[in-house]
Amino acid sequence: MKPNPRGRQRVDAVIVPAVLEQAILLRREVPSRSVRQIIQILEWEGRVKPGEVKRSTLQEKLTQSGYSSRQMRLYESKGVAARRFQKRCRMALAQSDIKYGPYLPIGPSGEKKQVYLVLFEDDASRLVLHGNFSRCSTRRSWKIAFAKRFRSTVHLRRSTSIRGNNIKQSG
Image (cartoon, rainbow, N blue to C red; front, top):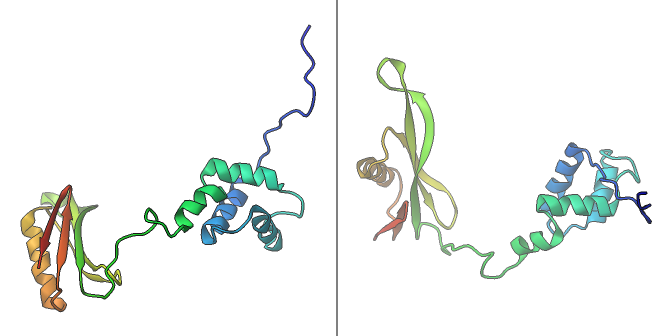
């Protein structure tokens, strides 16, 4: 004999992935939006029929995806962890970095070689001051890009270069 389960049977509720994706976009757009508001917007847009998606089901799926109201509050808070460093006035600090770029057919006989992006941006405005692709990620390619940046922009008071764990400052 098997025991007869009592109460409600748990049924895994299914929300169509496209609807869940839209709900996540709505939550990311305004993190303080409640689940009821998200469902109402989805109904107004005609993505779901009224009453098709339950509040508890959507809340559970958002939590599983990492978009619960508690998790979104971390990004909304004005605390030290949510703030990022930023200079107050523009052109006071420039940041540079070297990133991996795509593979391009620039080698001998059209062989694909990796290129690297050398980028300089203003810290306050996030304006890209200069960027170019280089065949290698050496200090020489960074210096060439640095020299090109000064030909095309005004002089900064301070600049920072981040390469791996090394931070180099000039100015």
